[in-house]
Length: 138
Length: 146
Image (cartoon, rainbow over all chains, first blue to last red):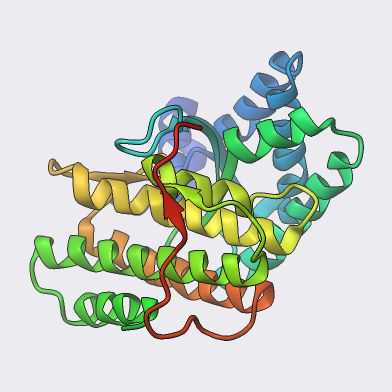
């Protein structure tokens, strides 16, 4: 892609300059960042959504501007019945050495929340929810 | 043999891999080595617990580590789950690209990722239960209707 200087950017129509900005960052961060919290708030009527919100909030607090995206998918193990889990994928632009610290903060936040969970909720968490942490440019 | 022999083989394959099949095989060996290692350390740490159900031994092991009140154990579960996802892509998704963390990967890049995650998982296992699994360690697993 041709480089666009700041002066040239000011002369471009907004749509074009936005596209250049997004392409230069490769990930359209603001759109992704805004999406998940809105989605999570809308889903917070269930225990699983509350837990996903806890994980995402702890990651956002810890990472600040280094949080690139958060998205939820489902996953299951081949040939193992009833193995579907909700996966919250958290992508950062921090370095790998930071991931362990961020993960620890998230798991500490879960442990704190779990003090008020029932045994059934603890089991539901163990069997149904996980998260991944990765870097945007491995 | 020791469970980590699979893991070391996977790392050797990854470091010299030339073909897509080799990258995929590296991911598979890294995962299986660490699955067995995690299982042996889990039962060494929790000797009185019920054997795994052979029909779902991978998810059951991951879930047992995912104790919400224990961040040490939870970190093992998170990393084990990540490797499970990569292994499923490497072994079952023959059409490219491979997918992980909602993103596209080449087999080579996914093998690199598996090596990073594998190293972190070994470090987390050391905190959970120090010392490698012994020669011939077998993960306790039985067929069960539960």
